[in-house]
Length: 201
Image (cartoon, rainbow, N blue to C red; front, side):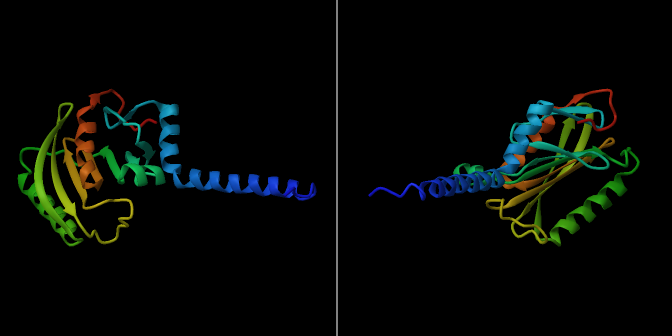
């Protein structure tokens, strides 16, 4: 069966329109991954803040805020569907308080407040851990969250983790899928000291 010539242009136009709609849908569904690629093409694989420089894996991109920056890995449709990737966010900023040897009681009080805060929101305090970031010692508190009140878990497969670290003028935190918690520690191990004291893109 041969289509009338006057119909063919409309079919071509409809085909082009459908293709454009599908392309836009895929771009929108995977925009965060494309944004990460765009960031790396522009800035490379390192980010600076608070007197240190860290390596940024390909799946993360950087956003700045008033005191520091955060690295986000927001998996698009393809990474969620085919690789079961989960959300991950890492924050790095100067700490407003530098710990000293005579404020152990204040540190313990702050720790208990932090534990209570997250336990009230459905998380469980799972472990304490100390890490070295360049010459800075940070005390870290880990939490596992199953039903974290106030957060949408559609991009987190299984339990999520919270990690809060501070010490010697530096603050770092992690939020995301429990399996990605090691990403945070691996990234912090890449830290190198620099002279700049402010966040730079």
